[in-house]
Image 1 (cartoon, rainbow over the protein chains, first blue to last red):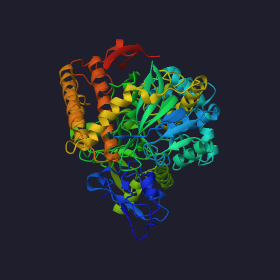
Image 2 (image 1 turned 180 degrees about the vertical axis):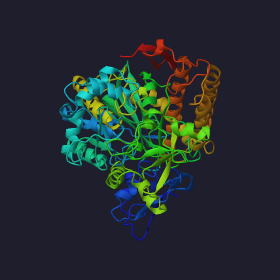
Image 3 (image 1 turned 30 degrees about the horizontal axis):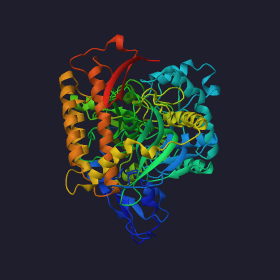
Image 4 (image 1 turned 90 degrees about the vertical axis):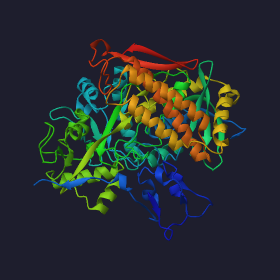
Length: 74
Length: 557
């Protein structure tokens, strides 16, 4: 669920883990790609996506949070 | 036993929580020449409800609004944030708000991104506009930089769990380091403490997606910690009985409904509110500010659901709307809409009312932002007799910083806060939680609390029997939690303590809701179905004395 790290792009700087407002990430060993330890605690604020200089992060919005829409009436 | 760092930290002013109010308090205290520490649960660069941005800053600019402040005071009182103010606080806030705006603009937060001071959104046709539109996407890194520039010590990943009081005065606080998997307690000796921990999310089940505890419009890490620790320390909380509900897109809970420039419509395309027929950036549809329960009411009546229709909005206003959603931090939602092909130019998006949370309900402060506990100051979303969201946090944060510094300068010596009995008691409770090999997780405890809050102190109906039963169940749950809660590392221990704080807030809600024997706003009593004019000018406070709640009425100022 939520944040997804592209391991090929990640340079293991640890910024995402450091700045996450809900402490979703876990760095087991310094200079390794963080693990998404608590995906269900993601607020989907995008802080990690915005602050990753490597553009290695993306979010997946879980199904229960889907946005609902219809075609507008003409 | 849980580890404790044997060397206490010392700081003149401790700021608990590095959100907007916290960072502004820290900057302002540091400018007074005292030593300041911010203890932050996450990282001040991206923490709290303003983590990735904001776009509305309530503000009075005499050059624009005119020299007479009265119409602006009236507008504040009638706005969505104005219901529970003490008037002198509103005036002091308005007098200083523009100064804070100018500082932010100088520091690099674009307060007039279009060149002029522009007031947009949350506005009525023909009335003064009070919400300055700004581009706050970088507000947290900018404020962090300004704090560091003034030598503020920022300790990230150190949530504060309690303030320590001796003889009615603040002497320090207890922190819980979550930097590593192993939790470590850190005692801080301080001459003044400013609590700025934001709102209380996760107290009621998420209205749209009950299984998703973190799908909240305001930051889910804000769990009423400041209110709870102040309450435990003897500070008064005020207006706790009044639920507050935000609204926004369904099901992804987001703030920022006023950035949407459109008209609320039913599924047949019929306009719901009377305010606007052609939405513009200056005047969007204010229906949901006025009729807070519109989305719920239409859904329940069968006439719904309710959509926002932006298809008649001018192209340049649509571009402006998307630009402002980015700057207020809604980029995750915009990315999602792009991916899913949701286009406001042709689609109507459903809106909903979210679950109650505490904002502008909580710690009672005087005009210097001090509580009734000497040396304990508060600012931002957690104060109960004033609310102006980001602008309130910035302005009263600044006031709190100044006041806390003035007090700290008068105190010569630090007290040995680490010797307090409270440290022993709390250490015992935390140790028991981490020592248990099996038991209830924090998620279980949080959900159990939410369902009691929903059914017995909810927004549909309250009564003496429901509230009385709920209070009993809440106390039962507290016992279960204290006996069964378990955590396997620092992170989950922090979550456990969040639930205990939420429970404390819940308790204050039950006691005050029982005492307010009338129906007013979203406090709906089936046994007192009328609004009592005799209570219109009365606020209800609650505080703890010898571990017992004391509920008292006072006149509104």
